[in-house]
Length: 365
Image (cartoon, rainbow, N blue to C red):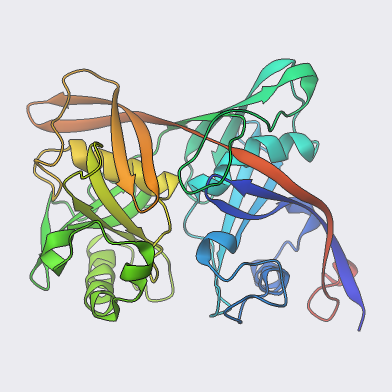
């Protein structure tokens, strides 16, 4: 059996990892692209044993980069969430953790020239249309990966990468509150449907009989919770104008609870059929906005600060993620301007990966 070689870089971005490709090195048609990504990641097996995936949704993510067609941006970032076992590829969401590696990867792939010192990379997230400015340390015009910044849930330290998210309200639905309400009741559970960087359905942990401080393993073992949560998520998806979401990872689901470790609020984030080991960068922005908006399910958990920007410290299963929110609050009306985070990324490998030529041969597409 012959195989097709595809150039790639392999990065950890935030608390996720996956291959980063030039979009031009992959099939143009989405059907062929999906087949290639499923083969590359080894989707369809719980361990992804026949591919580069790692048996968890945070390790079956893909970034595809190209020089931007947007006048504002330097790089277009196209994201794919590949299933672990179901051999499905979802192009609807974006991923903020994988986005952390986009700036370094764009430089390594030759899509952007680095400056001496710090290089600003303007990124256009194709899936959602959002715009992000990433600041990359590039002394001597070379990406620096070594530093003292730590990310809870990631071992060791690395060089900081600062991200400023612009135009993230209504990233998928074009609305801050896609259902039109600050709070909806679905199957007896109060939820807030909000779209800031990631469309989410957010509920109080206590309404599911949970504390909100459970570990990832405890949550994943709680089949009763998922049986209760999924119908609510699907119903919310319809309320948000997203149609049938059975085969989509969005809207994502989140739980909130009072802080327990000195942060602003405790949160648990779902991908959505398993618990996230830490917290998604995109989801963190939505949860922070929910915390600051009067009348949501998070109302009262965080004291809204009269000073903007303000930092919301979100407690997740492996630590805390700080989100800097620039906002306005006028007569109980919340307006989101931008959000900022500092994360890290590391180049892990480069070379060629191989998929069976029966799946794709460039000359035949």
